Image 1 (cartoon, rainbow, N blue to C red):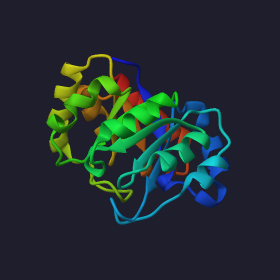
Image 2 (cartoon, one colour; image 1 turned 180 degrees about the vertical axis):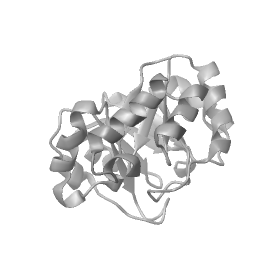
Image 3 (cartoon, rainbow, N blue to C red; image 1 turned 120 degrees about the vertical axis):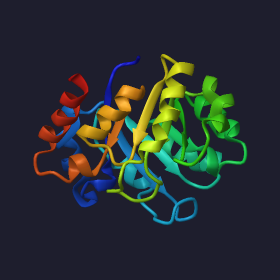
Length: 214
């Protein structure tokens, strides 16, 4: 299995001082997870490419587009803003291969995501086009939701299909649920409230890491 990666989600961080927030966790972060919501695919709206452009960190930016039918020009804004990887949603795109090909042609890591109720079958044809699959462990849109354990068989099946693929989980991740997902094959852990919701952010990350070593 690929190495463990921790990806703090800025959805739960204080956006007014985002660079200070990131600086606090960056030594123990492998990725910084940035949720982009358009108010169409999911009800909330969040930050845009201009916000991402202002982020100052050497930690790779993991941009998660919860966006209906993102155009090439829209995706390019995030590439130009410094994205290391871009995740699109299978459910949000008529032909996900179109977006994935565009991202790849621009030299950016590609990923595809599915919501808890979406079958793994829907993305099997794209697995050779991506560097990572994000399996949502909550319904996308809001921070602080409860981890959906019923998603774990998808993680298990995907790990059997792709032993070397990065499998990311996002939603309700804490030391306990991270271990549950890790045991099924996940290796990239997005945590928002479990990190930025705590006073001791480094301690929170170490708790998650320690749970994966037991």
